[in-house]
Length: 125
Image (cartoon, rainbow, N blue to C red; front, side, top):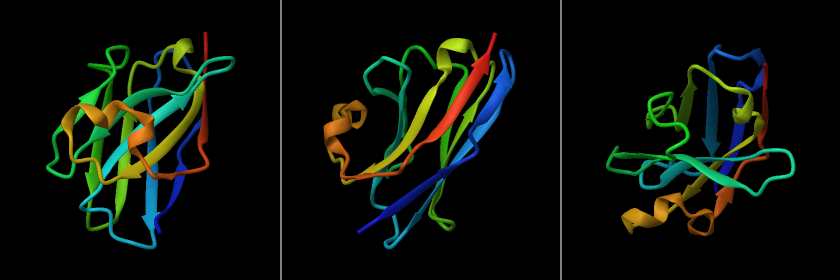
């Protein structure tokens, strides 16, 4: 079992930055793909970014160039650096972990077994 706890959310004005953290416990996650998904008000959960166990990354088009996902396997933690935030980035952000071995599946929520409770990010205009 893997437990995931997100932190770092908050209320910021448009253009600001936030860094989300996802701390894993229960099992080391070095062999897992880790990802961030988000769900905005009235919207379905959507893929944001993923980092494979190899360290390679994938991003949704809407966040490319603004968000950066990284991981520190020694700390069993994954991060999401979010820059130049926009009001449309407002959502609950969820961390996920899974043994995803097929590259294109890293953007699919069904590929992830473990999920955190989410952290709210609100960007004001």
